[in-house]
Image (tube, rainbow, N blue to C red; front, side):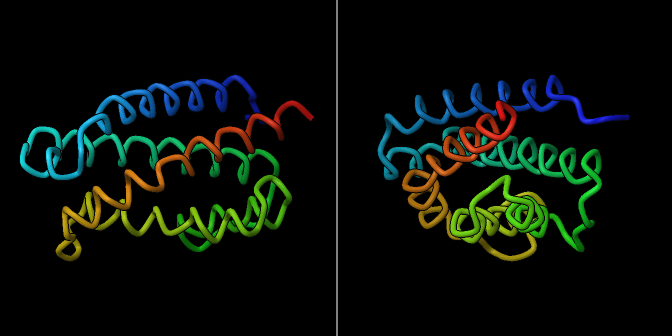
Length: 140
């Protein structure tokens, strides 16, 4: 397999769609989301789907452009940073989403729902920024 912009574009489109859903959900306050378990579970699932898509994108870049492999999924962001696809300061900001995703999905440790929702509401625009960086790279 060789690098396929279409694969990355499809994943970016899905991610954008999930972000549209997030924006609709975040019309509600953190308090309203936390009071409704359905809304909370939707937020958790959307977060997982977004992170899964961007990890897949990272891995596609790494595999198909023959970059050094990462020891873990968080490291995939660092590999893209080292190869000038993502800015280093952005990598430091976004890469911890992998650990948060793992705590949500695998229930490794108790995650405070209030902290999760407030953090997600405040920082979901990082995912939009990720999309812009990837699109800029693909257009070069």
